[in-house]
Structure formats: C-alpha cells, structure tokens
Image 1 (spheres, rainbow, N blue to C red):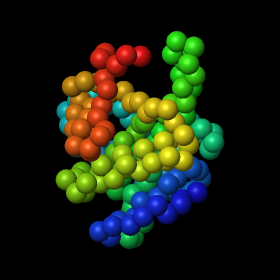
Image 2: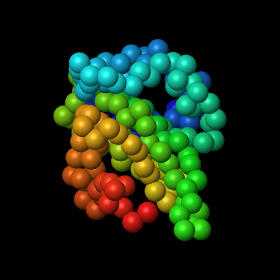
Image 3: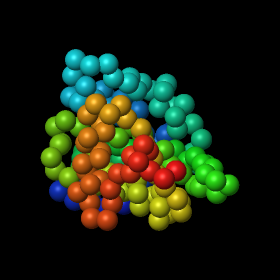
Image 4: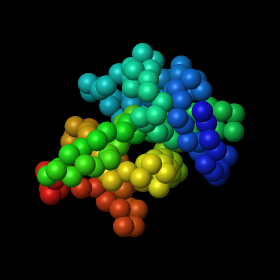
Length: 166
C-alpha cells in the first residue's frame, strides 16, 4: 500500500508496505538503470522481480520509501527489513536497509537524502527502531554515496562496524 508522505519539485514520496501495490517491472527497470550507472563494467547485484518478491514477502517485517514522478514513474526506492539484534544481552530492534536506488537521470537533486530521511522516519519514528544498518562492498558506489549523504545531514553520520562499539 502506498501512503503519501509528501511532495516536492514534481515528485511524490510514498511510504510502502506491500509489494502487491508496486509496479515491479518498473522498479526492476529503475534498479537496473541506476545500478548500471554505479557499477559500470563491474560485478554488481542483480535485483529481479523474484528476488524483490522474496525480500518483501512478509508485509509486517519491512518498510520502504518510493519516490515517483507526477506520471507515476519510480525514480527512487529504499527498503528496510526488520531484524532483531542481540548485543550483550540487550535486544535491539534493527532495520537492515537495502536496495537504495536513485535513477541516474535524477541524481544531484537531493533525492537520495530524501529517501534516507524517509526511511529513517519510518524506522525510527513510526516503528521505534533502535538502529538501522546496511552493508556495502567498501569500494563500490553505494557505500561512498550513502555515507556521504548521511555525513552531510546534521547530527547524522555513518558508524562503520569496524569502528562501532557493538
């Protein structure tokens, strides 16, 4: 189900909680286009419709943000999967963020930051998450892109696992 979060500059940001309401071929095409831009001539993950269906099979265990044009074409998406982490007998409600994607045609417009702010709002404010984490190969485009986006947001920042107390 799409829930309107807000609009700006001819784009609409939605909270998504059901894969059944998504135009999966359009999402797969968005991911392929964007990741080809980031991973040109490199090995990269291939997110197809079957993978996305498995990833988002349980509606109550994930949240997502989708950004679309006024025509309904997707230009950005991020999904966060609920996980429980245990650290020194503490139970932490965590979300694993994945599939962070912004169309190459819409880069440098703050859409990545808008996605991250949306996923953080859904996870922390609405779902009471304790933390969000994600993983990337350190030399691929996703890691520096996401890290630099977080680092530019006041009072945010990326804690790398090799330097994090947990």
